[in-house]
Length: 132
Image (tube, rainbow, N blue to C red; front, side, top):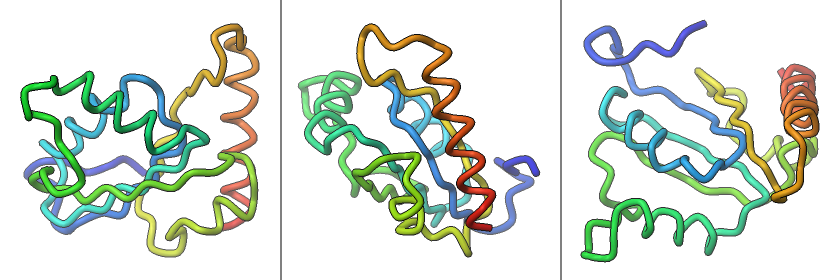
C-alpha cells in the first residue's frame, strides 16, 4: 500500500525506515510535513548515532536550528543501530504495528557498488517478508 499523507491521513502511522543515507534529514523533514501528528518513525541502520547526529547538524546548520528528537512537529523518531539484514535486528522494530516501510539505499563505504547496495536492500525486503 501507499503511505497516505496530508489531508488523506486519518491516523498516525508507524513507519520503518531501513537504511540511513546521507540525505536522511530530507526524508524525515518531508515526513514531518506530511504525516499526521503522532506518527512514529523507526530508523534502523548500521550507522552510529554520532554519525546521524553530525549529518543532522550539517543539514540544519550550526546556528541552533538542528532538529533533535524533540523538535519535530508531527513525527517522533526512534533510532536503532544494527545490521539492516539481520533477522534479530529487524525483530527489534515494531513490525506488528507497522503501517509502512521505507527501504533506503545506504552506501556503507565509498567504494561500495550500487549492485551491492541493491542486493542488501533486496535481502532486507525478503527478511522483512519472512517476519510478517
